[in-house]
Amino acid sequence: MPGEAPEPAPGAVRSPRRPWRREAGRARPAPALGYVPLRCHPWRRLPQLLVGLGLYGFGLSAMVRASLGVNPWSVLYEGVQRHCPLSFGTVNGLVGAFVLLLWVPLRQRPTLGTVANVLVLSFASDLGLALLPAHPGPPARVCLLCGGVLVNGMSLAVYVGARFGPGPRDGLMTGASAATSRSIRFVRTLMEVTVLVVGVLLGGGVGPGTVLYAVSIGPIAQALLPRFAYRTAEDRRREQDARDRGGPAAGAGAGGKGGRGAGRWEGVPVRSGRLLPTRHRP
Image (cartoon, rainbow, N blue to C red; front, side, top):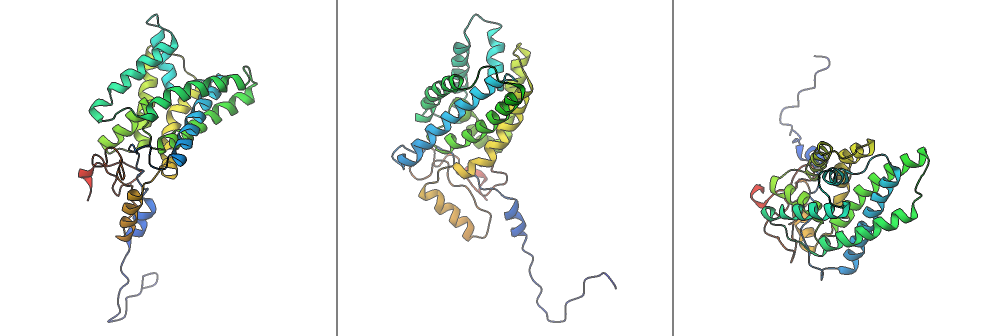
């Protein structure tokens, strides 16, 4: 019949379908984000950590100067301030301490990256506020807002990918992603939206930049983490083994060779960059 595919000749060998090509095209490698000791390539990872944290602090300064809405965590700090006689910095520290308590059930521990997160961000934020103009015009404010959100998403992937251990909020993000088998994008966006809602209910101020940050930071970090995540020799070996088996590339163990937590939530072939515990390995 016209329009129908012709029947193969008798004895002809049918070409096997190869769905793995389609699957591989949709899959994303799961980045290994567990802590790796300082002795592993420090000349490569330390600059990545410091540059990432510095850019993140500068991105926060750009959003402040834009005056179009701060990030959801700052909205939460402002809301808490309205109900207790504490300074903005004190509220920031107390919320950070509470977030660190949430690390306990996720088996996360503070590391060099956790300490650097507090110190470098404080310095970089003050430096950014000193360098950026205090009262820019409307077009400049829009540029500062969009640039700040983009820089924050990229720098988050940079300093978390250095694998010195994330800051308080980022440790909660990566730990929850590993424990729940959900993507970084989903967990980060859920965190930001939840914090935003609580901050608004407490009386914190919001703007268009707040909403933009809440829905953008997760997808940007998700997309860039595979590019910046440091991979140990063991990580690369696992990825090569996965390719040799014909499946989509897989992220390596969270701790990697010599890394803390190597047997706790090892990466496996997954979709959308999800970090799966070892028990989910096929």
